[in-house]
Structures are given as structure tokens and as C-alpha cells.
Image: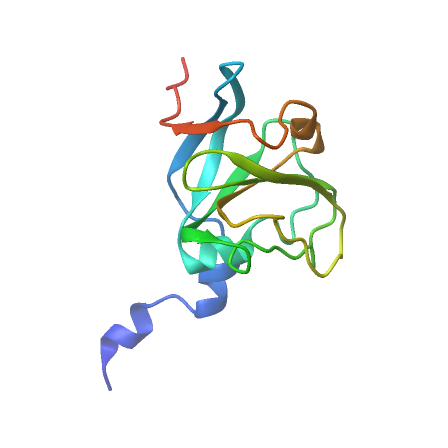
Length: 146
């Protein structure tokens, strides 16, 4: 029997357990305001699938960015199954332009951008008060604490 098989984690652990992943600042270009200081950068299948599912609460500075390979409506559609709180959702195209926003409610089957997007920012609903379609977003390395 191959012993290497026993050293691999089960697939369900890869999807459910949080992993160490890259983080980015989300910056509103027009105001220079940092919207989310350390958003999780979700560019892999498992991290995009997991998103905020099964979490019980969301802090105002929590956020993540679901990253696709190119602008698309279908690939950047989201669901809210097993998400237990409202989310502020911002769709951003490859040029950094906000193409849509939504207040996503728990257990809704689908939210899609009005135009193709490459990035889906999910955060506290209050983020929607600071961003509108046509604005621009920049992603930067997070500032080190301390």
C-alpha cells in the first residue's frame, strides 16, 4: 500500500478548515479610504467555495475577495446557502471599476453582477455605504501591524 496517501488531508478538511492564505487591502481609489484592511484573497477553488459559509458572525473589518481568471457574469455569481448573515457584495472588473453592488441576504440561491466582473468583494453590509457603481477599487499588500 502506498503510504503517501495517508499523509494527505481528507478533501472535506480542505474545504471547511480555514487555511493560511494571502491577504490584501481593499482601497477605494476616489477617497483613498481602506475599505477592508486585510481581506482574504480567495483565488483557489476551495477558498472560493468556502467563502463565508458556516461562519456565525461577521466583524465590520472582515472581508474576502473571490478572484476569477477573467471578467465573467456566470463565474462571479454567488450563492448565500449556509451563510447566516447579510453581506455587502461589490463586483469589480479587471480594470478595477465597480460594476455592481448588492446587499446579499442569507439563504438566497443566487446574486449575479449586472456586468461581467473578475473580483467579488464580500464584506460587512456597511461597506455598501462607501462604494457605488463606477467607482474604482485597488488591491494592495496589507500594512503590517504594530
